[in-house]
Length: 564
Ligand code: ATP
Ligand code: MG
Image (cartoon, rainbow, N blue to C red; front, side, top):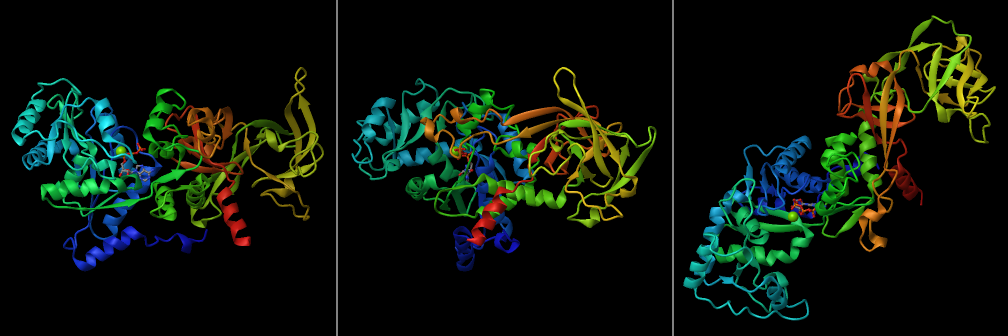
């Protein structure tokens, strides 16, 4: 993908906003909002909505509100309210003073409901939930009117105030909008506006025992905040007539609802219900587990906010649902890290190598380049001595064809150091496993090139045994084995969990220069991939997460497309 292809593309929502600015529809104002329900941590799908809503506000000199849609007291927690704010800020967006809670509007919502009752547009209904379902009808069968539909406004006002006062048991009555039981749109068949529920609310405590439902709350909240463009996902398209009906009947300020396609990603699940399940059942270590599609998981994994914003731009905004290849997200992450991450050497599965002709007590420092993509990042000095570690995979006693790395009698280059040649193999007597190599080094090849022009076919990374730091490295793969988890398993997404999504390596060795690495710092471990320091890390025990391997499958797909 070239840079030109990923500059912010015009989309139909930007087109609407620009048109509205031109015609002065909202007096030139642009006010959007991001309205999460605090019932889980934010995920990459939310990031798309955040980038869109905050992005549009930024581009057109408007504001974007952060509004907690907290009308469901049983599933909501203060922990989620905190994490959501942290994640939006980390992504790089600022709501300024515009932080709101739907629960702050409970009193106003109640008044709006009373107004609708007085207009004959809402009524208290005593049908049981089962009866309500039966009366609602289906897509092909019209609904039936509730026997309580024609209660007088006086009776409804009285009953509604007594619902609020706590005179009736949970679930015994609801307040419904009085619209049209024969409507082709089921959302318009007298939808429920309020339910009785004795549950403690994270902000209003036990003040309320009736709670407004989403469809009623959302449009009124948008109206109170004088939102101009209420951007939501496609599944709310069928709710738009209801959004408009409430505001028209209330005769209040009326924003425009606009729907766009939600983000779906391969090899992951995104619904909060499923994410809660993964956390609660212990399939992951928590909401911020680096395998989670949550923003906090991606942060811990080493994804930068820039790469996530970039991804959200690249995927664009459309009116049709589709699924994005997870490889594209990783591609954006690699592109960003390739530019920013310093290169270091780290041996994940160490094999001890003794350089038999290197003097016992000598050590020296060799110069290494920090980032070939960015000369301004300079160089560093890496210690070298008689005993080093190389990657176990880089040696084969009996090398197959195409294996050009180290083998008995063969010479390779140690990156930034010397040519070495394998002259001996030490094995464990019992297991016959190779435990040490003996090599000679060529002092004439310091820096990694031979004055006589002698060529070697492989360059290996290494660390000096006496100087290297011990580290734990956590290797991640996708949490699921199939592109659409659960699809072939009757929806049981947990049946597709990848048992190898986490592999922990305990005896890795990294360059001593990483002693001061702080949680969140990212590096490219040469030939291994991108890694970042985990919050579990301490000065005595470094812990790294693999952010991504170096294999960019998306770039390969792109190249294939260009060729064909
Ligand atoms: P989930 O289905 O994952 O529980 P939700 O829509 O119930 O998500 P909310 O907290 O209500 O979660 O979402 C807040 C905002 O984020 C909404 O405007 C919603 O449309 C948007 N959003 C949620 N998931 C996605 C997604 N996958 N792609 C784009 N926008 C999303
Ligand atoms: Mg929701």
